[in-house]
Length: 587
Picture 1: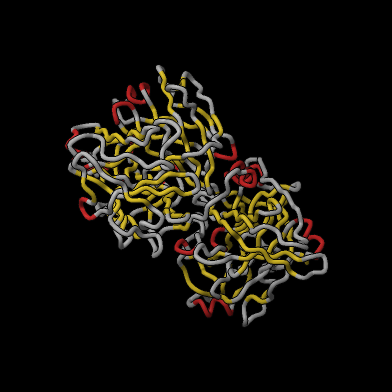
Picture 2: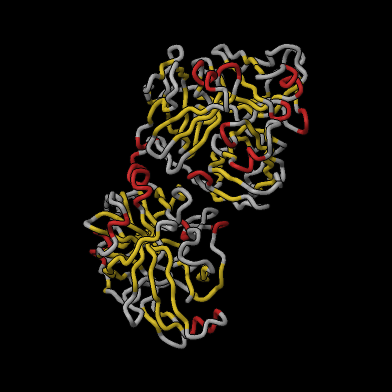
């Protein structure tokens, strides 16, 4: 028996070599490995045809250029499979008008939801005279295990039948089927249905992303299935001798219900994160985090996700063209157990993971990419005038500069050799409303921070010797907001304000930014909770500054809980002072 992803693209359907519990099919760089066995776009086999009125009522959407299926969760949002999207080009989504003529809309922001083969897409604004239906649909709240033995109704536009020796046939006709769920495979998140004895009443390639419903709620989308060949020695032979599709796998959406349901409510927009291809034995999404990905917003690259490895090679991945910095950049990150690390990113796009002198096992166990950003080049930036003996561009880096994007001040470059801790003053228009404490990377990945005052004065402080700062101080990744619009999220569990700046969040172009500072005399790490529309799809770990320039991190859960974590023996530093300034994660 063969297993297959339900997608026809460019123009081949990919046959999965792995079994049912294999990793979810990805998109672009994450496309599953396997053999090419069929061409064109395909429909549900068996079932019954879906008319235009039903498509409009249910919000059933054509996804192109992949030839997949999708469904509306709101008038401007589509739910589909992640492997149906090309994150490097334009994707269009079409639904028929009342007269049957398709009305297309372009996707302006696309998100793979966690590491699953699930995606949500924000569509361009409606044009004049649009007949796009206003459909709103929520994800099913129940445990997917409870659906075993129940009927689910699914929709798609894949192959409609078998026609030996040509294999699967039929194209472009939306169909529906209702099948009993025979089992739930927890590792893959798949609800499994079995086909009839003649191989009908099942999904087929091209149905990818099509929705399955129970009582008007979405329970799953079409992801993959398995078919039988009387002779499967080669893909061509298999294609010509298909006898039936044995089982269909529908990816449950229950795991990400809250995230998907609240996506249309987000203030501030969403960002398109492009999946990254890991190398040298590195793997993605350890400890229930996201897969590695990158988004380019204006002139700034933002990273997302987390990685791990059992090997010794420090090179984890290479950024694609257009996402590479003009010089070497060094950005602090958090490793296993909240220890300090950094990424070195070269002009060739090579991303190198380093520790702060601690064991390599800290990086192997866990390396977060959250909260890491850098400018591609000097476009729109103002070079900073250095003082007190500080000089620019040590170790192949670029000069110190500042840029303002959508109210966010971003620093870049690196400096060295100063005689005091005050290297420069930010110009008017690039100064914060409150004093900011933001972690930075020093020599040999040592811990440090910038204190940025409201008059623009910048003070460098080192956790160890000041010589670490004199040797090398990176400004890359330092950012803060100059405007308002933050939503206060009050401390809990014994946490209190540090000073007068309450913890607060703001969505800027799909990036959730934090500000404020907190403290506690207790031991409970749960400091505050984000509203649902600000919560991530997976756990995220973000470096933050603690008392005495110690570095800790925020652990943000999909529930919205925000926990403060410190390295072993350094909880006192979190109790004394935890800065939220400069911390962020991408939705």
